[in-house]
Length: 477
Image 1 (cartoon, rainbow, N blue to C red):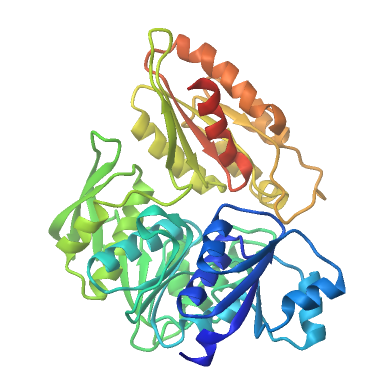
Image 2: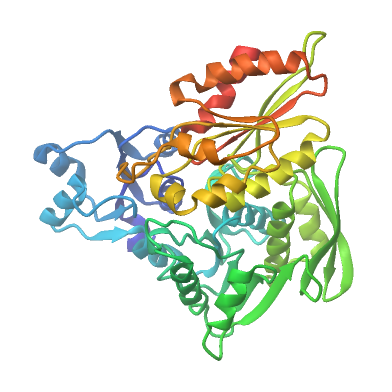
């Protein structure tokens, strides 16, 4: 066992999707893990069961912090935590090395053939699909994914092979120091306006990321996306070999003939270099899902996986948590039509449009309702007009209070400002958070009794909106 693998690492913000995955990998490699988070989360139960010591809540007492840090070799902190966080202050006072997540990832992935999956949207699904395909092919990868994937047993996969699949996040510069043998860029557009002042800043960050691919390595990109084209144009010469994918002609990997499947998924013919190589069948709907699968196919091929084998594995993919995740169904009765509730992490206008389009494909003749929780004041302020136009495929929209996350309201914004700007065929409502579940239950009872085809309800956002679906099922089921 190496010194790195036997270290006692303390993870701050350990309940987060990214940090918890790092903790699982360190535990699986034989290391000692402790950590803390301001809030509890279900994923902490799995960490505790695996041997991690986790404290929930904020502690400022010097004696308590010193005791918790006793024996710790290194502290790894979430990029969301300020430098003045009490545990960071205590670690500096005690002389314990501190790594931000962006500094720890190169240490974690050293010695592996790193496949870094980046993009403004779609990186979680792409990473999950790729990990599933590689595991099925016997490559035995290690993987860090930004959401729980039931088929993989969580958000981390620890394998004995050389390949390490990493969801590479631009937030907080998390992908800045990586050394990928192969990198993926799904798309590039303005996101995280609290960190990036404009789209040019985002494109510059992704250009720097792409330029870090090892000499002789490969860059797999969605050639259809204009932001990606700008990144490629800004790369120095020589740079990595580029393999593109998309729906447009002349892509190295292309999907054509997209159509819905009877089960609510999507099917397409896959072409490589202009030649049909197989049929892609996915259980989940949406053009964006097809694009993510193409990225996984392209990478798998680069790693030596036969196309037929990769397509077979993708056909079994059932999804990641909060990515078009079926919450449940209320069956029709002689008094009302059916209700299907789907939860999705979409919290950017582009993601909302893509998810809504997928929902319409899935819904057929049913009406599509949306309950959306805007995520952060800065994002809503910067993209207000785009948000207002993102719901055109919905029949009815309910906007609830802004989920502040790491921010405070310094912009004078309110969720009702967005509700007033949205125009959809039926209507848009602003509903306070504490009233949302009851209001939806009441309106659904009325509407379903008059709608024999039923309703597909989407709950959208990166915050607590995910709680609404289960509450509705309990109320209406």
